[in-house]
Figure 1: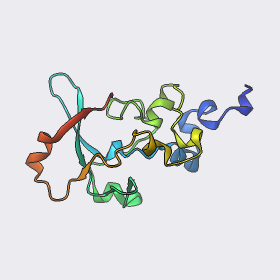
Figure 2: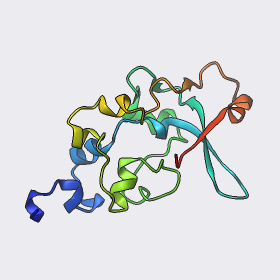
Figure 3: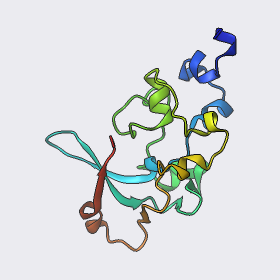
Figure 4: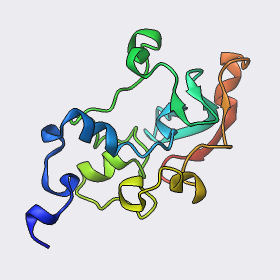
Length: 149
């Protein structure tokens, strides 16, 4: 396949993506909205079944995306400079592209259907609850899965 026939995520560096290209790479899994903890001894990142209060659990999207940093200062924004970091799930499209890996078949840029990620059980749809109503001291007790799964 010639370079011009390849999709943009295979021919451009993340820093070269237009705003719309950048946004389109997000697979909509919602995993980055899940509350995680990092083990102080091993640096292992473990996820809970608790999501940020701003995650719309039905549609798996942020209800305050444009203002998320001001409304949730601890929200980690994915950038070209941090897309390779371990805090992102191994299946994250930004992470995969930053590592030169292909997008999975279920990614909407491959499948042409944003629901495919949910159909193949790769999103947090139906797996998480909102942090609203959960005491902050109880969240760490809700560690459910490893981000590298």
